[in-house]
Length: 147
Image 1 (tube, rainbow, N blue to C red):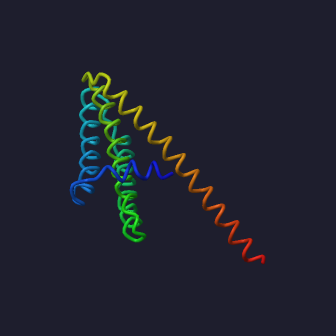
Image 2 (cartoon, rainbow, N blue to C red):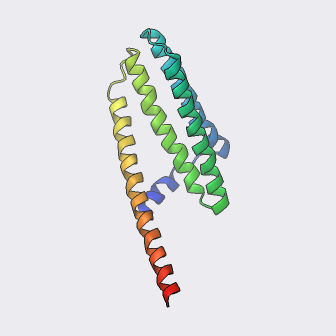
Image 3 (tube, rainbow, N blue to C red):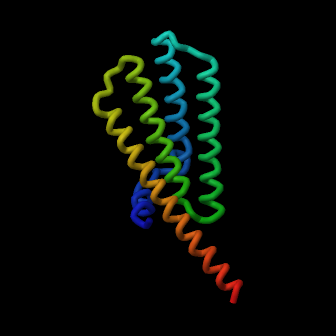
């Protein structure tokens, strides 16, 4: 678990404003490239746009909550981690939009997709480890109550 924390603690934004602005800029870029590729492909659909914008709203909520958790509990790596994850996720989506629009992205798209999948695997492993620790703490607490 510490290796994941160390990996993300090494990635530092130059300023808190950039840590907030960068994922937002990537999200806006994803919206823009998605709309442009839909226009190019004659596939503009208001329902898809509405759903996409609602997904972006959820991403913003998660970003805000990561800052609440980070500063409420002194776990600043959480907001950095969420920001970096959003940047990777939006980068994959942007490259997919470019590819659908006919722009050759080469191996960049596959590299980002692989890194995002690797990050998802790391997140799932980290969650499993946290669940194990929480379960162990619950058992210890219950055992102390029984004594």
